[in-house]
Amino acid sequence: MLDWSQLEETCKTCTRCGLAETRTKSVFGIGPRDADILFVGEGPGQQEDLRGEPFVGPAGQFLDEMLSIIDLGRQNCYIANVVKCRPPMNRDPQEAEQDACIGYLRNQFALIRPRLVICLGRIAAKRLIRPDYSITREHGLWVNKGGTWMTATYHPSALLRDPSKRPEAFRDLMSIKSKILEVGAKF
Ligand code: URA
Image (cartoon, rainbow, N blue to C red; front, side, top):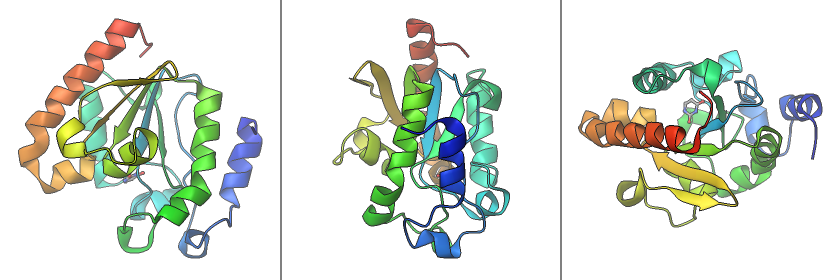
């Protein structure tokens, strides 16, 4: 396991997969390193690739609105992605790319030791909760893995594309707020 500065430096200069060739900046993650709440997206989009920060484009603006509904902000949760470099044309990250990159997220998880992990979308949920996870059927449900509570909700991009999913995502947010209060996670 690497410490924060070694990990961030390794990630910044990583060439473990082909995404390194097309990225502008790798997107390590952001937030308090002692956060109780960790949000995990899929991978950087165009704005994130340019700025080196997660969720700063349209999906990020929507994520901020979602967080504000339950009195969360970037100052009280850590935000990271399954893959740290932008897949060209925002395609899904391939299994091999996820395999090459997942060690960074696992190391971040080990350093942060969050109480709650919230997967944003199918890719993160399949990678972190269960390979056959169904976001449509299982979003908003909680599982405890090794002492950490984990759930998933729709990806903010999916909610921008399909507003009909927003009421379900709203209920997921209510469930996240309840879990925060139930376990006494700091926010
Ligand atoms: N979508 C993601 O999954 N992550 C980001 O950082 C931005 C958009």
